[in-house]
Image 1: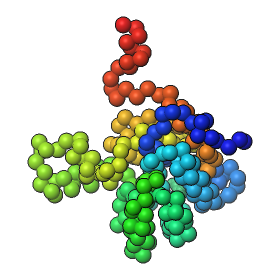
Image 2: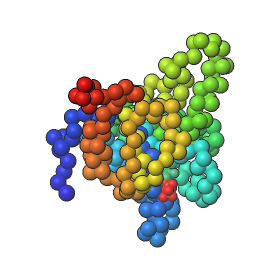
Image 3: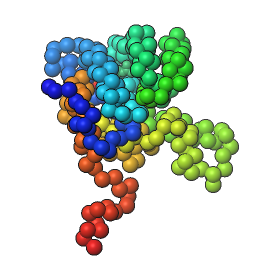
Length: 247
Ligand code: FPP
């Protein structure tokens, strides 16, 4: 396939893309491989998608790496996923840093092994000044858990009820300071939100490409951007193009 040029991209590019990287297990099953082989293939694909996002000028990428519900998976898979995340930090942090990626974490780190937790904190600190791409890793993340946490913190801070606004809630979310996702992609054809960015995604455009995550390549990303560029975002209002034409 020919390389993708900047001129192949639509003019309107989302600032923030969020991805539910679904289908690793089915990708592996279809090849007679163990599920963890699917997660490893998914990790390799993530590297390619990060590079494509940088090349396409995306500023924020949020990935759903491990949900608060994923602890319920078989112990071997949970431990395997932890090992993959740790390997990425051990072996790929420098390259991410060199590419100008700022790592951020959303979710809770408290259930992690203390050594691993410290590694994650060090990685966040190491890349803190980078500005080319902000990579939010949703790890031990759940949208409801995030909102419950925000409410607890607001109450603890003694905020008066009349002072609670949407803007204030934003400041108490794990994503404070990050713009809402313009586009949320869930691969594998599943049509669910699965507790991902349920507050921030209120007006996001959604896309459900029917490919497993390890197969979601640069061309798939370009197609997603193309589709996004044709969406008219109305935020609950009417369409100035469509509805005024009829007036
Ligand atoms: C969903 O597919 C995928 C996950 C729960 C894990 C995603 C994690 C990675 C791709 C690893 C890379 C991330 C980092 C931060 C290094 P599934 O297992 O639910 O697939 P299935 O629905 O086909 O079983």
